Image (cartoon, helix red, strand yellow):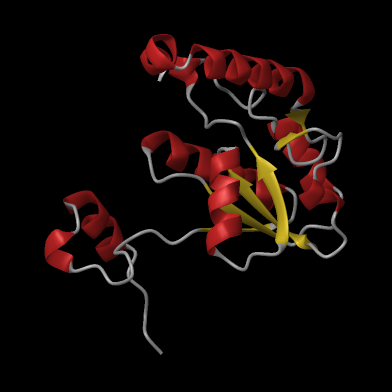
Length: 172
């Protein structure tokens, strides 16, 4: 993109730079969920139509957007802005887990939906979050992982298939 702007679109590149500068100056974090917002409280947290008894924890604003676009979820969010990764210097403090613990302690939240990615760091983060939830008297749940809807077993990677097989459930 940088080469294209330098070769053919220098004027548009300057406009893009100005817009990015404005975004960096204006956009901060929501004081409640930590998502990106121009206001101190984002539109999702300010909405009275959201279910305040359910809180979904995601790693990033893009994860939040994906859930909003693909599901009918109407609860609240908490955005970690990462996942536990000691090698990268990301611990509980950097992820705002003290703020999350505070929210869980208020007593309004009944279920904590853990929607971290199924990576080693994501699973470690999920485990940590579940412990926080239980300590706050909140029921932790985890997004299901496994064979995608419409997927065929012969095309699913070994790790996903092994996880799905190990997490199988009783059919009623």
